[in-house]
Image (cartoon, rainbow, N blue to C red; front, side, top):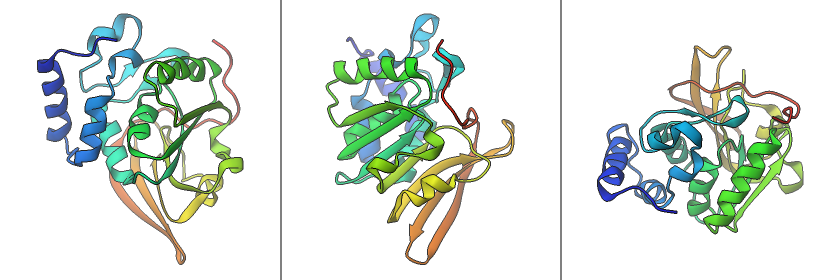
Length: 215
């Protein structure tokens, strides 16, 4: 797969930095993972713009700077096992795969999981496991996780996911009652309980229970 030309890549990384993505490991991962293959159809020529774009099943691929800021907030170490709820295009999981020991990603839409798996295979990312399922319940069989990232908005941080987070773990999740007003939250779990930080306003599709209908 041919990546972007050097100037496009430089502009892409500059846009990330100018919007607050400053962690060198995150920037390096985002430089290594070409966003192009994750964007299909008429939107392929816009793959390197800092904008969300439509993908199959009525979902979106988040804008790169939001992916970068969420990844940065997660503070992933090379030893971590990460759960991603909401595979979508697979772009976020591919970036996490460059930073973590193992990534589990789950989505309610079988088509999205199938398409993401093909890209993970092409990019040779053996440490990503992608599954079809109801992400609002997490992945109890593989819990607990060092890090959890949710790429759909819930009214509150989901209880089953908080239960699957290790003490010392971090979860990043958009929280909001409507599509109009959502806040990106970082939850840190300690022996004493949970600490919440509000990071920034965001807009994500809602976190829905159940499996998606096959498109």
